[in-house]
Length: 128
Image 1: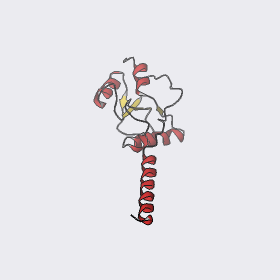
Image 2 (image 1 turned 30 degrees about the horizontal axis):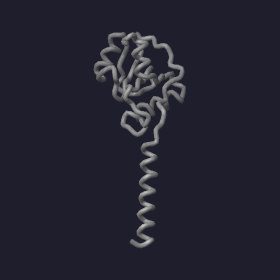
Image 3 (image 1 turned 90 degrees about the vertical axis):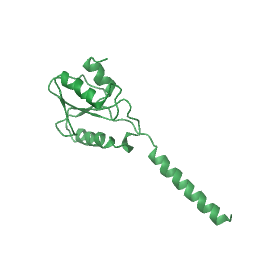
Image 4 (image 1 turned 60 degrees about the horizontal axis):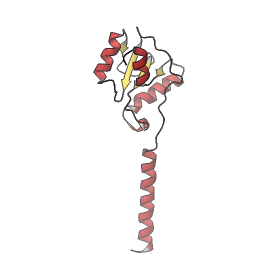
């Protein structure tokens, strides 16, 4: 193999490593800090990602028993977004990351939307 071929292979490998590194670069979940006390009746929730509590339907049923409303999408009227416990730090590269990004944009524009951990939601709801 000549020097030119070795150089090209090395350049391709370096580029692939850079691209992979960018994709696997972890980010932190944008949880509100400190996480606020949650008052349940009449507020809206949306769950995203995979929850330890149970399926999405089980989480939604729990919310309904607390007198709350499940939202189908991230809107300005959403009160709480709950990323599931199994959402990794590379959430921005996952499909559910779009919900988190939209919630962050609303929150950053002054909408009183709160992003809390599933663990906090469970504790506040007395479901532990």
